Image 1 (spheres, rainbow over the protein chains, first blue to last red):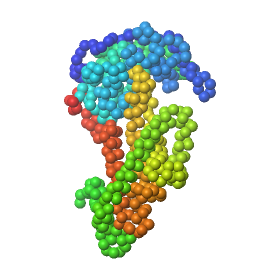
Image 2: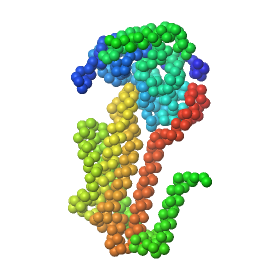
Image 3: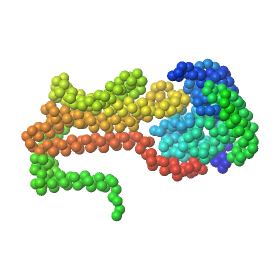
Image 4: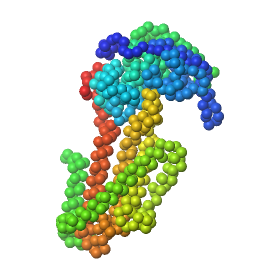
Length: 268
Length: 271
């Protein structure tokens, strides 16, 4: 909690925008013919909301996220972000944070955060200023000169989050960003993410396997079925914010977690 | 007793070898024909400096040209073969098998095509050095983490930006390793072809003085090639170290990260 005090309060950057997924299905050509991966997904993520998607392995939740990012094209259906369809990657509307930090090992933390700006030929001074403020936001002041191999797993993901936010997109998509971290770091990072989220008011779509993480972070948890992936439940997490570690031990938290678990394990 | 540093031991071994080179022939156990003393070798090298210098220039010219071909064509073909799946499936098995063929067998044909001057050496050594450069470039491009390209795409990188800003920097370490090996093979190619058929170059001096049993002059030429190869290797390693800082500093870096586990509360260590 004391980490909160280290960062200037007040909102940073543009606020969130809604994401609307309407009737999205996906079929891919496998070795044994056509495999349906996603089936008629319809969901709305309200502006500034924190939505977590959970589901069994291979249910297509990463595919869905890749489609929201414009990195993969769905077979049918539409995805709108801030009211306009997503057809290609658009880092000014949607930032993405991947499971592995996927930082460029030949660039320093600062250069990695500057990368998306450099792609658009933003002048060096402005690039530097914006990246520095993002590194400050994620709690990495003074680490800009480090190479990724000089950073711990948690710090790498902080850089990755800073990189996802540097273009100030209204939407941040996160694909199991903390899955490779140890339990302790994972808890800290979840907490840090909530702090960053509350400061930036972005819309966050977050994929995870951890039910505890899902309940701890989310405004709303969407549960997906095994392949072909469908949305089988929508759970409103009405725990007060700011969330605290102590909440995890409460009955309310346990009941929410249990409900998600019942949905996931349900054979269908 | 304290154990001496590996670097010290390496220098001691080198000094020991040079000392043995000087002292063993002096004991007359080994005839001069087999091994002339170091001092004598250096003396004839100095005496014949004009001849050695001239021939060294020829060798250097051939090596330089051959390296240019090996590296230039090697990187170009390697990039195409590594980056384009159709070419890769078509050509990579062929190239890999060719690499195992003793290409020196082609050298007589090259002399027929290009004559016994520098051209045949450049062609032969260029092809000799081409394979490792080409194969490691292809491997470097093929083994790029697809996650990095996905991340670049998510940040809006065009295909050209992906090539310039991700594929090229990511493959530099493997390409450099290939250049080091290819460069060394180029030197071997030039010297071997000079020894086989030629009218100039250090390799030519080796084989000419060998036929008249002038051992000190043979060893003087050998010494030059030795120094040339070592210098090239040192240069290549230096370039590798300079360009790939982010890769070689790995172990040192982890300890830095371990010392500062809590980034939000840590004081800035690097400005």
